[in-house]
Amino acid sequence: MSSIAENISGIKSGIPRSVRLVAVSKTRPANEILEAFDAGQRLFGENRVQELLAKKDLLPKDIEWHLIGHLQTNKVKYVVPFITMIESVDSIRLLTMINEEAGKAGRVVNCLLQIHIAEEESKSGFTIDELTEAGKSGTFGQLENVNICGVMGMATFTDDKTQVRKEFKFLRSCFEILRNDFFARDRNFTEISMGMSGDYQYAVEEGSTIIRIGSLIFGERTKQNNK
Image (cartoon, rainbow, N blue to C red; front, side, top):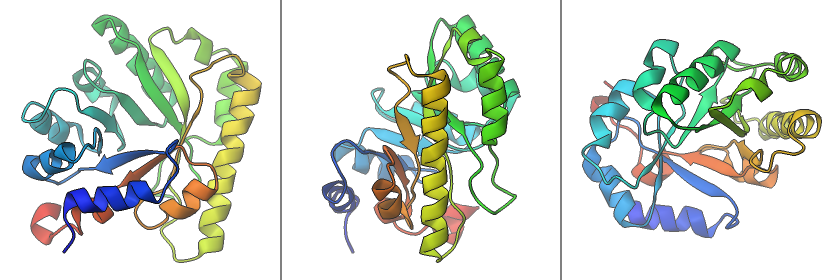
């Protein structure tokens, strides 16, 4: 069985240097995360605030943590002081709360706008119409403590490659609409986070700049890890 270090090396060797790898470490123990860290990995993704808080103090301080799961507004204050990026911003209310808490913490927090691109209703996110409306109303320009860096999306969980590519193309088109209409002068609006273990190759081909990989690095989660 390949080691975590070998898995990371294999993934990085197959993607452009411009594409960043987020190692999805949800449910993984600190020792496995440290093994990835020792192999040179610095970006890690967690989807639950409580789990992230329990891990972060056990691990090196220079880890760049990305929150990739749904964030409740009442938990924003716990992650804002240290988080590197919140990829899963799926409502204006959440965006406003992040801005407020970041101001209190004296930080500017990097965020991605999560767009609903999948057929599955369980996946959250903005519609492009909602974001266009927010842009026209001037909402984005009012967020002094939030740095909107781009977009994020999750494709439908399916073996239909055509559908997955179509959804990734749509996310890329949403990024271009937002960049051209509202962020043309913002040098930070550059990121398209799409692609996970089962579909990241397609995502990279369709313009992804950040991929989020878990099982291909750490192996499949066991039933015990899933609890």
